[in-house]
Length: 252
Length: 316
Image 1 (cartoon, one colour):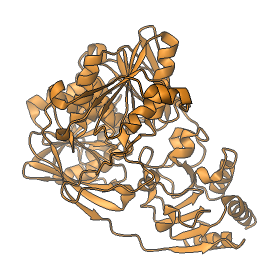
Image 2: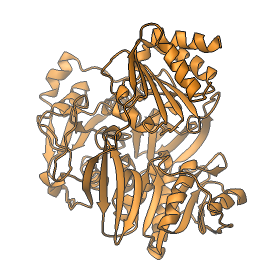
Image 3: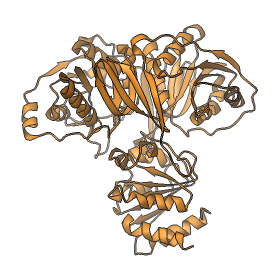
Image 4: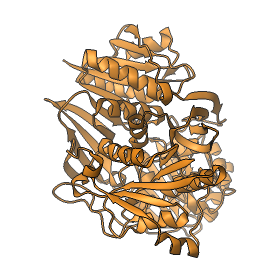
C-alpha cells in the first residue's frame, strides 16, 4: 500500500500572525511548525502502511524554511518527503495548491492519499476535494474512523447529525478530523533518523503547474470592536452576578 | 440580471437552513436557481420557491456520496447555461461539491465568506479573519461562474412569498472510479434544543479538566433549557461528540446568551460564537482572550463557580 500524507508547515499558531501590508499574504517565518492537525493524518498513514505493508510519503507545498515541520512528521516515522517550494506560489489559492499536490502525488504514485480537513492557517477547507477531483478518485471526507485494505476504504464521515459510514474502492483521498487516531510522539531514534531521510525538493515548473494568481485580497481592516464588558474576580459569590444577568436577559 | 445558483442539501426532508439563508442574499443579486441535492418533495420545493427560487435543478444521489456526481452534473450544466455565481454554505457536503466543481471547472473558490457582492465582472467577498478581529475583502475576476462558500448564519432566513418554482431533474452521470457509497446513517441522540437554533448555549472547554466535569455543563444547560456546545480541543480529546463542536471547524451559533465554561477563546472557537448577543465567560486565566468579547467575565475556577451557580438555580 502506497500511502501519501499531505502535510503543511505553518507559523507557530501560539504566536500572532502577521500579514504583509501590501499583498495581505501571511508572513511566513523561516521556522515553521507542522500543522498540529496533520499529526493525525501522519499517524493514520503510518498505521495503515504498517498493517498492510507499504510506505508513507509526505507531500507538502510552501516555503521550506528550516524544514522543522517536515522533520517533525518524518520523526513520527514517515519514510520520505516531497516538498514543493517556489516563490511564485506565494498567495496561491486552494486550486493551485491542489494542482501542485496532485502533480507531486501523481509523480510519486499512490493507493491512498490522507489529508487533514483544512489547514489551521488558511482553512479554505476545499483542498482535499479538489485534489480528489484532479486525481479522479473519491474524496472520503471528515473521517472520524478509517479502515483501508483489500482495495477498499471505509470511513465514518462526520455529518451535522452524527456520522455516515461511507465506502469506496482504492485509490482514494481521505480527509481525517483531528482525533481520528492518537498521534504518536517521536522517539529519540525517530528524531535522529528523520535527519537522514530523503527530502525531494521541487518547484512549480518542475510539475508544470501554472502559478498565476486568481484571488486578490484588496483590504484588511480591524473589525468593529465589541463593547467592553465587565470582568470580575471570583470572590466566592461571582455566580450571583451570572444569575442576575440571566434574570436581566429573561433567561430565568 | 445576473444568474445566481445556490446549492442546497436536503436535511431531515427539508432544505438545509444555511441554504435558506443563502437564498435571502441570492435573490438580491439576481435570478435564482437552486441546485437541490436529496430525495426532494413538493413541500421542500415550495419552501425554496417561498424563499426566492424561481427554478430548482433537482439531483437525487440516492445512496451515492453526492460530491463527485453532483459536481459533475453542475459542471455540465454550467457549460450550457453560464451562471455568474454559485453559492454554497461552509458545511460538510457543500464544501465537497464546491471543491470538486471548482477543480473540474478550473475556478477559484472563495471560502468562509460572511458577505458577497457582484461587481461588473468580479465577485467581491467579505471574510472575518483572525477570530473575527479583522475584516478582509477579497476579489476574484475572470471566468465565471464564481464559486463562493458562505459561513452559516451570515444572512437571516426571510421568506419572500414566491410561488412554486419550476423543477427540472438534474441527471447524475456515472463518475467511474470517483464514486463512493453511503452504507449507513447514524444520528447521534441529543437531548434538549439543537445547537444551531438554541436561544441559550452552555459550552465547555479544556479548562474543565476532564470529560466527567462536562457533566456540570450539561446540568447547567438543562436548568436553562439550553443546548450544550464544546471547543475543538475537547472534541478532539474525545470528551464529547463532534456534533457539539462550535467554531471554525464546527458550528456557527448566534444565541441570545452564550455561557463559556473553561474556554480560553482560541480564534478557532471565537469565530463560531462571537456574534452571540450576550457572552458570559468563566475562566481561571485573567488574560484569556475570551474575556475580550465577554459581557460578563468571571475570573475563577469553573469547579468552584459552576457548582454554586447550579445550586443557586436549583434553589430558585
